[in-house]
Length: 328
Image 1 (tube, rainbow, N blue to C red):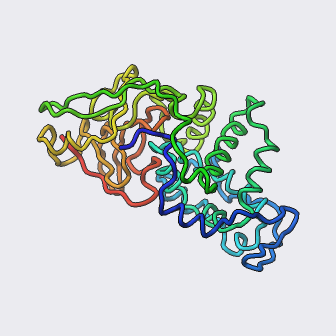
Image 2 (image 1 turned 90 degrees about the horizontal axis):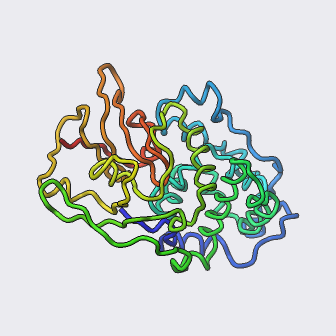
């Protein structure tokens, strides 16, 4: 599991964006994409049919349901101006998931893979221009409104993703307050960690992290917050090493716990560790019920966010490819 939250976007996406986003961008006053020669007639942002903070949203019991309900109808998507599309993407109910992963690359990829609005935005030649215009408009550094602060962070992350300069940038913005460290598995295998991470290491302030946490709580109303956001430890460290809120170890990978015989795979019971496979997430089982469906409760830490108790499929890591295994 990678530590650097400000790691540049992967080469494969840089190729996509270099093809999709030439250096020159169309004037925002035009509703025509000159590259595709398409007339965009919808100038208002799309209103999602189901939104957070509603009874309808709370009925969703999995991230997959939320993802499916938040797609933009193709007939509307293809006709939206880029300005309207930017506003729509920034209102995407699950955009806070981008910060629930251990790098911006992982977070961006997760959103891109499951949201047609972001996929369309990467194709627009004036995407960066419109994002910059929106950034200037909201002035998020001068407000205390959590939603606006979060949108400002989303804009910044999207600009980094869509900018050719940032795609090949370095990690010079990361302040190295942490130290390299390690912990040991029950069977004595050394596991590398980063110790003492701060919000600066993640490119955030405590206020910004709090604003993002509020968005995550709204997106997952059926999850219960166990502890608040923390920059110091992540899901693997929480599940496999220490559940203490004073944990200072950020663990890249917990695979050693599963390969050195410290734990063996088996049936999930209360207290089992759960590994989400390709979802790159770990948690601790708190309840296993009967009946149909995934009636399993898990307690886990979501990236920089807090620790949540949640249904096993109602978390940011089950929108795409994943496979849960249990370890005792």
